[in-house]
Image (cartoon, rainbow, N blue to C red; front, side, top):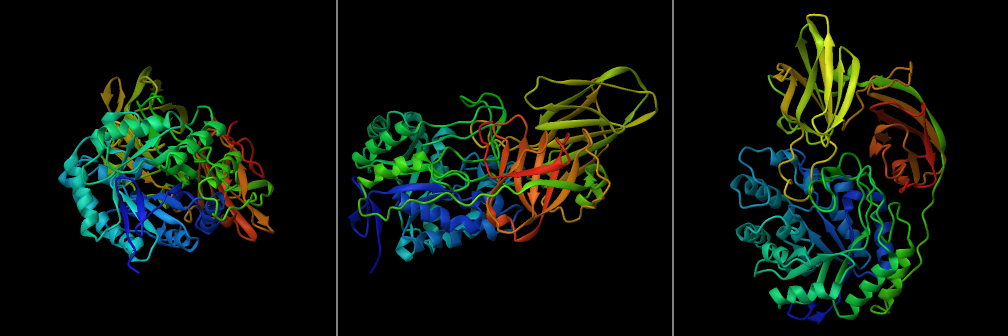
Amino acid sequence: MNHTVSITNTAIEIDGKPVQIISGAIHYFRVHPEQWRDRLAKAVQMGLNCIETYFCWNLHEPAPGKYDFSGILDFKRFITIAHELGLYVIVRPGPYICAEWENGGIPPWVMALPGCRLRRNNPVYMKAVTSWFDVLLPMLSLLQYTCGGPVIIAAVENEYGSYGRDSDYLRALRDMFLNHDFDVPLITADGGGDNSFVLGGSIDECPVTLTFDCGNVLKYFDDKRQLRPDGPDCCMEYWVGAFDHWGRAHSTIETVNAADKLDEMLAAGASVNLYMFHGGTNFGFTNGANKDTEPFGDYAAHVTSYDYDAPLNECGDPTEKYFAFQQVIKKYRPDAAFGEPQPGRKSAYGMVELTESAELFGQLSFLSEPQYTNDTETMESFGLNQGFMLYETTLRGPIDPPEMLRIYGLRDRAQIWLDGKYIGAMFRTENEPTFPITFSEKTARLQVLVENTGHINYGPHFGYDLKGILQGITIRYQYQDNYTCYPLPLDDLSSLKFTSEVKNTENKPTFYRGNFDVNVPADTFVKFPGVKGMVWINGFNLGRYWNIGPGNTLYVPAPVLRQGRNEIIVFELHKLKRLAVELSDRHELSC
């Protein structure tokens, strides 16, 4: 049988028959690969017939021409599992994905290319996109429903109308799909409730789908039909939850209202994709950030958890929302394979003593190759997509009375030392913070450790958020020069030289290591052990913690653990609560 997928004026048709798509978003790159089958099976049990996912270009091509499709990035395995479970799949390759994800999924090295302007028909940008799509799209093309796979729809870009209105750019992307033998429908997705978004982000050649919240959902469809009467009603992102920023309250969406609005759409015959069905985690340095977009205000980075108040929570357990949605879906798919999934196993492994340490400044030769520059260059200029940059220079003195040190163009957070003495910390949102500098010798060593807390992923500042110190460091308003720079991606800690002389130092960034034994691996949660830092277990980067919240734990997927001896490493920037880490059986998201 020759399989077909089409979108008519009234329906999504599969093999010539109209199908109401009831889908849910899961991002393969936010879920441990050994848990993919569990999460996808729970989608089937809730009554979904489809799964939607983005694709993270930034992780797949961390450096030009160097590709990774292994482990958590093996999307073909993810899609194959969905197929085995009887699910259709919607793919959204971007190249821009937003998703509260680091730089909206576009590698920062692309942004740093001379003459590059992201998300427009810019030759430098399009050359990079073409190279990426020439690798990605042939892999996806083979997974189309028309080729025997589960992929029924592919999206061209993502919510483009809330950024630009370059139709030539959208058509060039569409042509790339066609040139790689895509014959399933190609759609666009833009924000409902704002006609300018649909006008800017749509092209005549692609059916329009919408993204919106739990508001007046049927009116969003009505408004769209005033502009584009063609095509069936389809919500590509129904925001059933919300994401969190550091230092702000944990976000939730009320279950009853979200379920009622889902019922309204399904009763009206619309197809719906729940964003998110299962959010997962921003492991490592993968969180994005917002700036100057309502209601977020000035720069605000996303937290490690991407729980999203979704029907399936961060650790894969069904929530009240899961069962409320399931009851709604039963009215429209009465013959689906509904089930009652149970919460996964959790274990409190208790306190883990941290018995070894390695101060960052004594480990630089093991972690980085020094770079020498006259000025404070950006992280991206050294190919550093994530992590930290240490800037060192020699100040000429004496300086007495004190003079003010200023950092111009800080992106994002800096800690400062003078001759090893801690001076203070500053964040990019602060209004020109200054620190008094004084010393009596002819020279003094200045060290500034800058953390990239997440590239902006949405809004007008997207594509311009280079990291590090963009402008420079001044004393007496004089720019300082002659820097030794240490790029610190912290993607491999195997070269660290630990010592058993452990001190809970203050304001001296330090790696701490401990070991613990596990009889039966189960999900567990690391209580935030200090002020600010990162945690690795068995080499797997769980992500950032910060005592400003929200939340007080990092999720540890059971497959990260192994039976027997396990290693934990904490990188603390300021001071630990104590020389130990607690592994709890409770996730604390709203503390």
